[in-house]
Amino acid sequence: MPALDATVTVNPTATVDSKGIATVRGTLTCTRADTLSVSGQLSQQQKKAGLVRAWYSTSVPCTPGQEVPWSTSTYPADLHFERGTAEAVTEVPIRDFVYWREFTVTDTSTITLTR
Image (cartoon, rainbow, N blue to C red; front, side):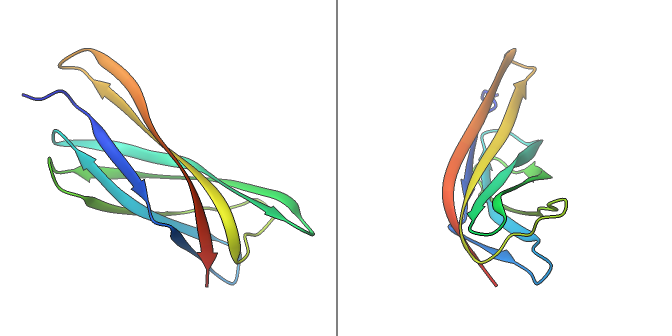
């Protein structure tokens, strides 16, 4: 049985709806079947509102050797995302109980928010 490892990617383009909710997408590839948590923070510097930040999170059932697509939305409190550039910091915590290893796979990407 291989050690549990994962590779997470974030699509370079995300969508933002008329309410300012952004949807981030990507893929997750694993070395072993498991359900992993993909979570992160989306940040966007805006002229009027300043820095807008929101969290996103989803669970992804992994199939070894396959790129499994994932998608999740943000819900900023009272600030809204808008079209333009944003930064997504995405993390996948790995807890391998077979080999007693714990670590986090991280991806930091500059993405474009579109309608």
